[in-house]
Image 1 (cartoon, rainbow, N blue to C red):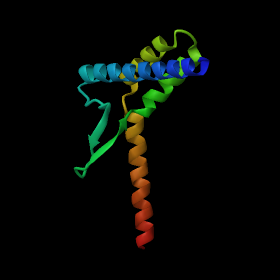
Image 2: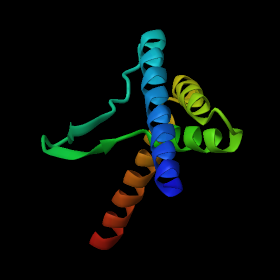
Image 3: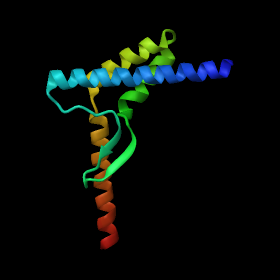
Length: 115
């Protein structure tokens, strides 16, 4: 029973971090006018295909989860607040930078294979 309780507690903390990210992202959208990151189970790719999968800004979720685990009790409150603060301050700028870098490396690799 203890293991099931710990697993349920971790899921609750993860849900609080996701909710905090969503709230923070909405606040960032309202204050800055920058388009928000959409948390969802489906999204449409650039070529019009429907992709199924949890679309989460990991650069915001993972630090919020780690901060909640390191901070102690009440973990759910820390997860929610840190998720909201990180999303308001950072947004998904880290992920945009990483995707741009990966796409640049992909094109460089393709150019090398063609020549």
